[in-house]
Figure (cartoon, rainbow, N blue to C red):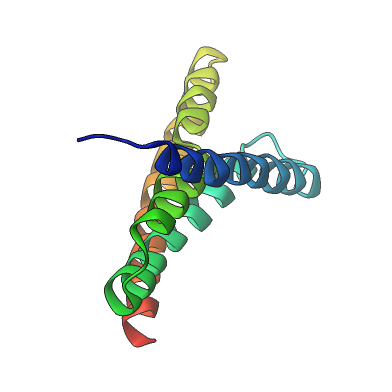
Length: 128
């Protein structure tokens, strides 16, 4: 498989926007909900999972999205927007701080809610 400069540029553009949106949304949520729990990451992971499910069905299966836009949206934007690496680090930090129950809760909530979010996205995409 070869990757050309146009594909690289599409992924970079989507990725930069996704990373920026992840930072803005997670920071905003964490500032609004003053808690000792990484709710910003949870919100971003849920939103990204929902968007993945919805956009795959709606844009790819129903509309037939251009392959270059697919790279920009799914690999670039959503790849940079979702924050599973951040989730993993935050969970490890909770364990290291002796907050095992909170860490386990973080894992359970993130994984359960993001799977539900992608499922709801798929359902909505199929209805449109």
